[in-house]
Every structure is written in C-alpha cells, then in structure tokens.
Image (cartoon, rainbow, N blue to C red; front, top):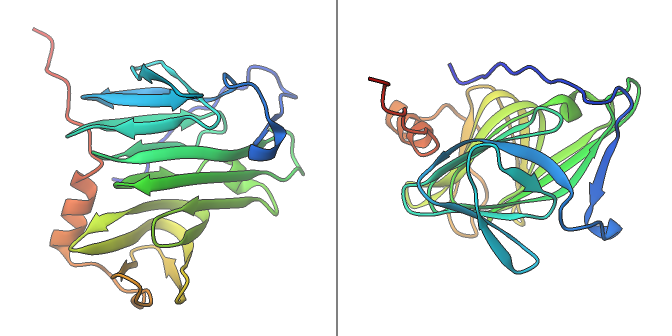
Length: 217
C-alpha cells in the first residue's frame, strides 16, 4: 500500500509557517525533518554542505541531493512527505501553512533531477491552497495527492497513486487521476492519461523504496 499514515503534532496551536523565496529569511528556518536516509545524502545551504541523517532538519531553500543508490525521506511541518530516489535533487521554494481553519496555504517543491514520491499533507486540505511541484518537463499542480515522478523508459514519467494531478508543459497539459500516468519524451506533448504497465509501475516504486535495515540480533 502506497499511502502512509502519519500523526501531526502541533507545537503551538497558532503557529504559522510562511517561507517564500522573496522573504529573505534566515538560512536556518526549519521546514521539516528527515525520517529515513539510505547511503549518502547531502544538503547545501548558502554554499555550505552538510550530511543528512535521521532527525536532521530540512531548511527552507536547502538543496537536498542524494548520491548513488541513495534515498531520502523527509516530512514537512504540515505532514507532507517527500521521498527522493538515487541521484536526485530537491528544493522547497515556498511553504505557507497555518494550522488554524479557514486559512489558505501554499507549497512549491522543485525536483530538478531524479525520481521522487510526493504524499500531500495538511496544506493540500486548505481551501484555495496552491501546491505544485516543478519538474524538468513541467509543473505538477496537485490536490489530495500521492504522486511519483522521474526519468524512466528513456523519458520522464508521472503516475498518480491517489488524488488528481495536472501536468503542464510548454507543449501541452494533461490531467491525471488515481491509477493514471503519462510519459513525456523530449519536447513532445505529454501522452494521454492511462494506466501504466505493471513492469513500469514496479520499477517506479523501486526507485524510491528504501532498503529495510538489518534485523536486530
């Protein structure tokens, strides 16, 4: 089962997270934390690199990069879960979240390289919320979503495991619903929404699956 269950605990009932590229906030504003790491993953902030480990903070505008055969799973403060496959790069460009009801929110994630899995959190539940993922082929507008994206079969693929996604490229737009995927090859239009072959689906999931730690003796 691809969906994960998570318990989100508010440290302050009226806490507000508003982090956008235009605000010029301090480099060490925390937007989430690392849940799991496999092999070597680094984050770069203001030209300084640091190794990522379980429990590490994810800062606003961190450039997170996973190495060969590496994986990273992190959870943002609203419960959004982000998983990176090997040789992937991700940045959180915008994060606006207020836990109070009847407020809007925004989240913008940029994945410039590699495969990812995105599981939406509480920002997506806000009326009028704007949540998008920038990819090498275009922008994913997401809603109530679990979505995979990444290079596969000599193209770039997107598959929706729950919710709805709109992929907009320079050559066209396609709407994907649960169980539907698309492929983009070069500068061609995105293919029409359709279920993926079982083998492609299996390889996509494997690209973001973390190895189980060895059992305790």
